[in-house]
Image (tube, rainbow, N blue to C red; front, top):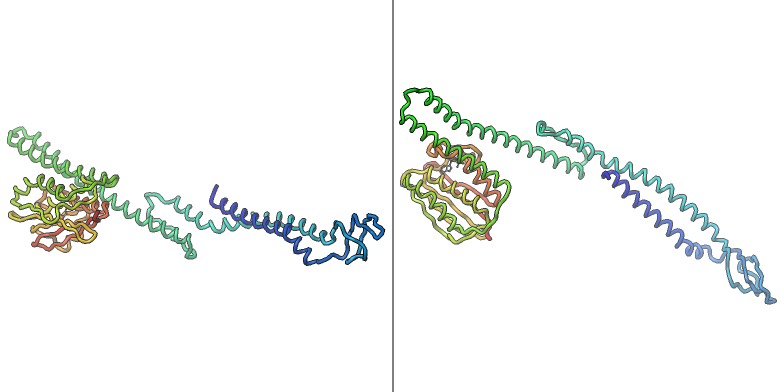
Length: 383
Ligand code: ADP
């Protein structure tokens, strides 16, 4: 049943019920008032009436009736005749009103829902190819206008999202193509050189390994993004325990660059989150602190509780981030000037980090100045 049919049925039903109530009122209540209003009728037909001689007769008498007559039973009350007419008229009226109610309800429903029909016609024409189309509904500021405006806003968000997605796919294709092309070209050069030595093959194998590990990392990041999009497996996580695991993994890399890793603050604090995703978040941030640093530098993880929030700060005294770059570092595939030091990254780390923190209803912010290091601050709701 369409909305229009439902509105028609509902309004018709309401009118019919009200009509029935009116008729009931007329037929049941009205006679009482009618009798009271009319008072004692002018003429009575008196049956079973005893006359002065004690004989039972039927008489028509004038009000108040002759003296000496006792009224036993009243029938054929004269005032009942107009009531019968009222009854018939009310039934005819009801039938007419019901018919009119159906027609009027249909018209009202059609008129009210006309804009909705227009909206649905335009909506049916919109596809991924013409997401720039809008309803631009120019009606009175009512519920329909609210619906149409909300629809336009939704289209705008979808259009941005689609644009973002297609940019992402083309960036991704580029990131995948570069190492693959370099692998293929190196292999071609090597194969076409009859004098290629074992050393050449060893060099190629090293380059190939680096390219493959970059590709592997990229695919891992993408899988993580896809997982984060789908499900969050909430657990209570003791911060200190998670950071110990991460530092153990990153210690060898930090040692290579002579970077000191340390933890401070309330390490027994707990947060509610997905252990795999949060592990990746902090691994990214600490790894960045190591990579964008100088030998002898440090990366510190500090945990604290501030009123209803649990705050984790990843501080480093590395290269720092300029104000201009700070506006972009959370964008996918964005890499700042310092990136060359981190040839493993692909500019996805902070985008993934911010996305995961968002999914956990947390906040991430950065304080940094060029040459003085950076502080990445993450806030979670306390549990
Ligand atoms: P990647 O490290 O792969 O380049 P990220 O998304 O992790 O990608 O970081 C984006 C950019 O932000 C980096 O290229 C770098 O310029 C900058 N950046 C991130 N963390 C730091 C940091 N701790 N210190 C200085 N620069 C940083």
